[in-house]
Amino acid sequence: MPSRGALGPLALFAAIAALLHLPAVHAIDAKCSACAAVATQLQSALEAERPRNHLDMRGRLDSKGVRYGKLIDYKVSELRFVELLETLCDDVGEKFGLDASLGAWTAGAKSAGKLAERKARKKELEGYCHRLVEAQEDALQEALYAGVLENESVEELMCRAYAPRDCEGEPASGSERGGEADAEREDL
Image 1 (cartoon, helix red, strand yellow):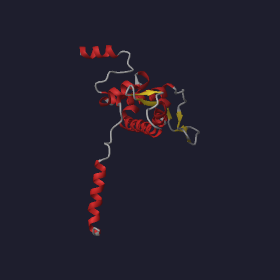
Image 2 (image 1 turned 30 degrees about the horizontal axis):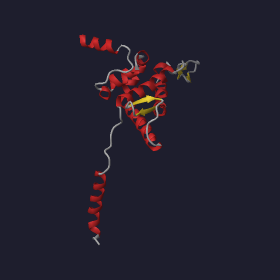
Image 3 (image 1 turned 180 degrees about the vertical axis):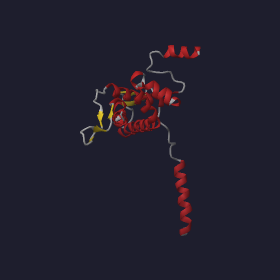
Image 4 (image 1 turned 45 degrees about the vertical axis):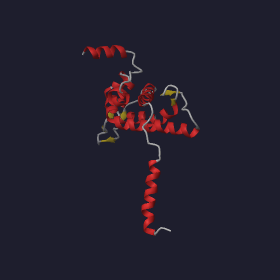
């Protein structure tokens, strides 16, 4: 029987050997289509928005009855931004799945495999969504306040402008002007 002091290094060696035999942790499959799925979900959230009243922050009155405080336009309020992103990542996991035949995240598709594997893919997409939104939060907020998100393709902004490494070498999927825009860039 080994001495008590010898068990520490043996246990450490066994733990290292076990870790070496684990499969490598990998990033999400099909990053570009995952980014497109998140952008599609944000685009649909923007389209589903209903007009809202301004935020009335004038709760104080002076001695003459005049209200003090701010009246904030809902379109440029932080409340709007938070409400848009609040359930974005939960919803993207529910609506998109990894289509094994295409190797891409598609709407309405179920990820292949057993129930545990499908749940893992769903969590994988949700985790990617959270990381993507966290990394782009400031840029998305500025674009929303400037009205750029309503006027341009959210996918083009999120996947091409703000996270170009996720879609390197892949053509724009949702752009109707894709060929024309590429030709314009070549002319420059």
